Image (tube, rainbow, N blue to C red):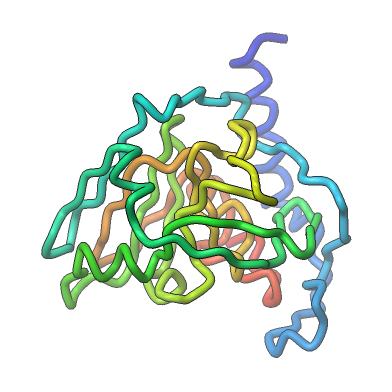
Length: 216
């Protein structure tokens, strides 16, 4: 089975999960009374899940940009990115495929710092994240404007592997991990919401693990 066939098989499986409501328990926990969201199981591994394509982006060739409804569009090369303020956090990760991993140590540029630089316009309420493999996902701006959201480059004290989204990925711990786009290359600020890759294929527009927002 070649790469294209594997990709189509994965897409078909996830679309079937969305239609069937796979993994849904109906036990929402919006107050976060438990550390483990409904329907999740703890793992000590970090499973690799993607569309069957792993971009190999060298930091010499890496480019990142921000545009859309902002006052100051931005373009960075790797040295620009690494010259920004850095923050280390410890957080849990929750994947829509039902695994959760506790106490992950990430380091990167705070998203709040990025917001200070680009200055979103008053009408900006959502963003579209685009990756080097052309994956996209949409996120409410309100979820990104938080202290634990990073443009992350390191995990457990080492550069993030390509398989997990290196050299830089978004880290948005409060939502399912498909919202934390790997291999991030561009962010578009928008006045209206629009579905990304998996959202077009039946996944939820927001993706809150404690409300079981797996599917739309």
